[in-house]
Image (cartoon, rainbow, N blue to C red; front, side):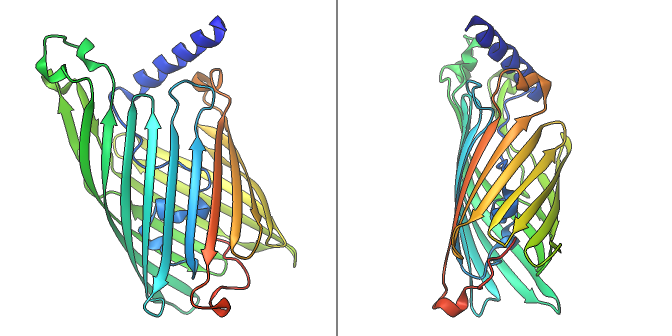
Length: 311
């Protein structure tokens, strides 16, 4: 018991020294982002050609006290003869004493091309970031720290491009174009700030035979001031019903994923992340993520594709 506590304390110290300042993740981290693209790109709205609703729950670094957990509920649909699409995402994430809760509204304009659809998206929203750390320990005489809770309300504005065809997707997005910072105390010892993210993702469907498909993919995420993250993934799809695959997130984790297309409208997914970062692997049992997606028909059965959208 004592050994486990000491490991947790050591990992916690390493984690906080690594981030160097009070900083929320801001952009939701999901292993199954390829099935819920609206959380990273507003131009993804309408791509399912149905009223698509997705819920996700993620427990990151299970067994590690104060580890991040997140919940997200998103929905999107095409309207106006499918040229325009609308979407919305509600999310909440907690990490130790920090939490962020927000909403993003998405608008996309979709242009049919010869072999696919090019979508241009915008999003706007608001987020409340809160930190309940006991920062009056920095300077008990500083009146700015008399209230140990820091709270900041921040607007957000994002944009993205998304191209999709029957076997290829390409996406680029900046989920939050604006950057805000709020600090308190002498010399702003404690602060809540945002970091701009640049995200590129792609995926491809390769037909191996009539019953088996191979789907490789990649996500690149650049965080200003923090560098580049690379996520490589691949899945096998059996009878367009059962998926299993894995992804590798550079210097972070090896992720195993499975999805089941229960009906043409209902999909269930689960991901387990095996931590490869030695500083955290000794104190955590990995990360778990559950996803559920349901697609409502638009107007009638003929408006929902017989073959579920593989992206």
